[in-house]
Length: 412
Figure 1 (cartoon, rainbow, N blue to C red):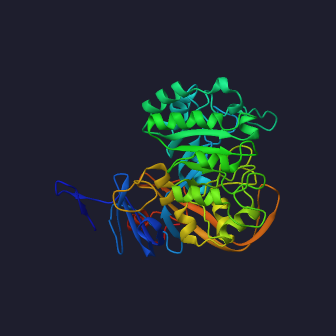
Figure 2: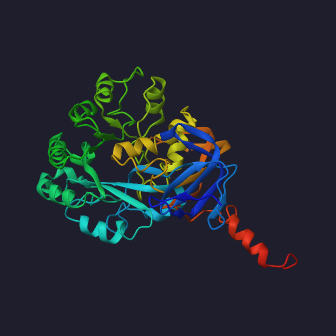
Figure 3: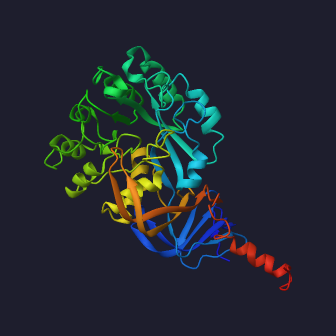
């Protein structure tokens, strides 16, 4: 039995051990077959030959173990907004152990989001608070009202109060600008949101759709650590020129420390844009799905499908994993996430990479045949085995051994 010691010198057993998986943890530049142990809701140790007769021990050999996947752009205010999906079901299907809701709720409906969705959830939910009073309140197949178009809904004072009171789960301020989100208001909503973010000392996430305002106008206003989501949009408001080069304003913003996030969604990711950006060596800082009710059945589908697209576009697996683990954690300023370092949050995602021919589609209807697909197989949440898709494949090895000692061999 392998034990570790607590600060008082007492022995601490492991609660869960993942045995024999290929551990890819970009936060530690780790890529090798080894074991991962969890205790008291945290990562306890990564190393070879870990064992504990009392632990839940899962054989994950032949699979890949990553830090718990973080989806930096989701909408999980289920039941409270028309675009919200269920975070726990999303975890089961896509291996996402931390869903970051980006502005579904504003200060006017935040309390319900926290009480009825965030607090009961077994998987972690963090949030960017919308500067608009009711968040994204009119987003469906038949109703589409841009909340930032109505300046009377901008609620900077209330947003500051709510953000200050909920720093444990609010990680930043959200605003949506563009023709569909803010009409002809240009950068006015962005200016208000930046003032709120500055007042509370948090980063901002800015949505951009069709002009006005222009892509360049938005990123020129963002500060180091702020996030531009929908960064690989199709034309108009794409980050690249018609000649396939990266716009100088985009290069300047990255140099300044602006974070470029994918935010796939229903209308915000194009293969043409991605190919141009990757060809220029401009990789996304973070890859996120922007999952909501209008894109969960396509074209985004889920986080692992979004990650698979970048794998098939030529990004290396380690870089794809980094963009949904350690990079996302740094954008959130939550270094305890996105890593399997001892003491980190006890989250892990077990994935496989299947080979074959897989059809992928972007938001403008272009199809791409990819040769690989990332599949979520199971997750670890807060140091415990959580809702595997195929429970028989990853049975508790210790439990099976114990059962064999008490059940006669000839028993059916």
